[in-house]
Image (tube, rainbow, N blue to C red; front, side):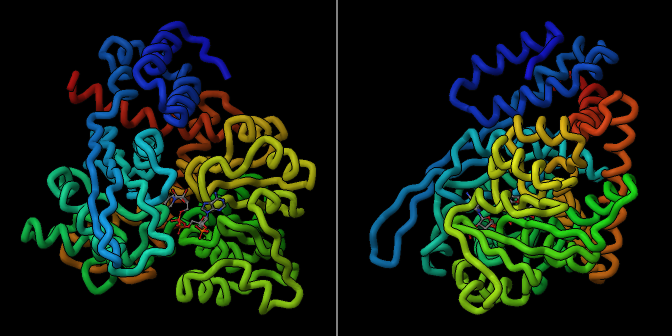
Length: 448
Ligand code: NDP
């Protein structure tokens, strides 16, 4: 991957000097700068106003300690982060991730991506992301509660309904959002819609839980339709078995696909009869158990230890919905060799850059994360609207808006691909489509 434009290359050198340890962030910035070369050449005014310099520098990086006490009375100290990347088109918006792998780099790259994703939704939301290296796995509810309360005790001063509205991400589901929201309310004495993904009894939106997975399938179906295909009758592999994966599996099945494999961070199951999603929901959402339990109760299913083998399963459509970098070049080559014709990303950055290049070069239909999984954040923005109105839409109303938004995202990306001559490279097209709106808003607001 190389940047041809001298100004952009110089900018990339500066970003590298400033962020020497932020590997993921650098990969992401490079990929975006490479995509937007034709835009920068067509818009010298962006260069003159320093829009690019501003765009690659987060508006704010907040880093704090999170002390908490476990059930045995032992003290632990984790690190918390919130990166507020860009507020040109609306308040910062993006999830909180709780996972031992979280570093400043993770949060910075995700916040940068989020700005483009949020722009693509067409809704007035800027980009942010947060999290901590705390691992909720194996912790009691009370330990998770104490951690969330401590995390919010610092975070609350940096967020607000018109400033920054966090949501869930890996390791942050309904339970964590509830504890975080309770502490925000206690600290501020305000009933603000300051977090999304809330429970339905206290301001959550119907269809938020389903939104990322359903939205992924709506986007993918639109992309398939534009190429004379659909989910109907296709064999589908979905990685992960968390929030995104479960509802991607549900919608892909409703649209006529047959999902034959899912995974967790230990391994994957293959069920040639088609995944029994009720069993997965019970294992993951109710029992919080490991996916291998599935194979114990489904005689035709097999369980394999290790995650990457899932991409060796023959399929027509692959929906990576677990985590970043889960599809390496080698895995991409296996998918291509087995006849897979569509890869659409439910997780954030699940395919490495060389894997994406392999998909594009092989002519696969490739739905990049920032477009394909934007349904979650779009529905979070719908939750914000409902909170502001003190009103709730029905499931069908939210789902219809989600479908409309995802169709709009595909059309926007597809037309950017055509306008800038990117062919089937929707990764580049999504970067351009997302960037243009943010850049115009930044131009209008001046150097700030
Ligand atoms: P969850 O925590 O609900 O689920 C994550 C799933 O991925 C779990 O099944 C987990 O397994 C599995 N997993 C984690 N690490 C690995 C690994 N190294 N290899 C294989 N599987 C792994 O998270 P979400 O479903 O919410 O998020 C999944 C992805 O989607 C993330 O990239 C997230 O950023 C992205 N996303 C989420 C949105 C949302 O609305 N939730 C919105 C947009 C993007 P285990 O149970 O073993 O940990």
